[in-house]
View (spheres, helix red, strand yellow):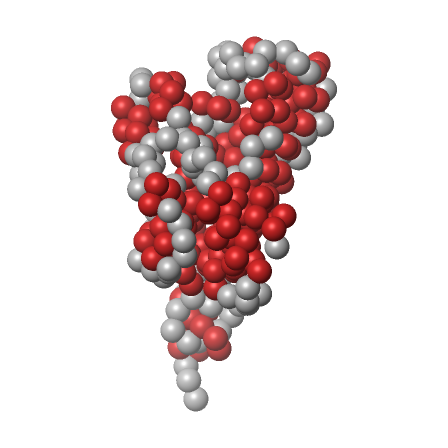
Amino acid sequence: MPSESSEPSRTSQPTGAQSGTGPGAENGSENPNLDFAGTTPYEDYVRADVLTHLQHPLSDDPGEMSFLVTTQVMELWFTVIVHEWTVASRALRADDPRTALEALKRSVYEMLSLNASWEPLAHLTPAQFNAYRGALGEGSGFQSAMYRRMEFMLGEKSASMLVPHRGAPRVYDELEKALHEPSLYDEVLRYLARRGEDIPEEVTGRDVSQRYEPHPRVEQVWARIYSGDPGSELLRLGEALTEVAEQVWRWRNDHLVATRRAMGSKQGTGGSAGVAWLEKRARKNVFPELWTARSYV
């Protein structure tokens, strides 16, 4: 018979097995391990303490906190979406459409979450926005470097959009690099050309630092793809891109509506024409031939 001293103390801290974290945990307690040296593994991975101390409102209005956190969340979604499109671009360059399709599909789900981020700001009245608008100074969303990288990856290239970032050398260099790299759509069209599709050389060899302009022969290629095998890999690629383009369009329109509700036709905080500038952006189609080709299928 075991001695009394051999029984584990009922008041001792849980060990790895007792806590459900160590060897044999499946047969032990379901209590989590609560004792860590230093920060928790969760904090080490997520850096939650950093994220939750990045908010420094500049006004006394309680609504500014929602505006600040929402825009920071948007920046995080921009970052992961740029990552997905970079993965997709590299995969297409390596003739690996499966990896590209997986990344594009993830990015669509991420864009759904990005677009949902508008909800806290979508119902602001002018008076509510004006309560902290002055704290923004000349700050404006179009100055977001990560959003600019998204636009560059969509083929919306413009060297003038580097100008606001001249005071931040690392950011400027990253954007300048992105300006001179093929966009996601450039990589798609080059992939189609390698697959034997009739993509003209003036498209595959164009100056990628310039805004992409639609081409009738690219439109014809997409029309042929959509008229062919409905289960083809190229059609699935076209549909994945269409999903991305639709979410971009929804993002732009949600931005437009939220801005129209909050400030009407006043000039934007960054000196832009505000709603008029956003209306112009919202009218543009991403991957244009994917949309116009549908009229010929």
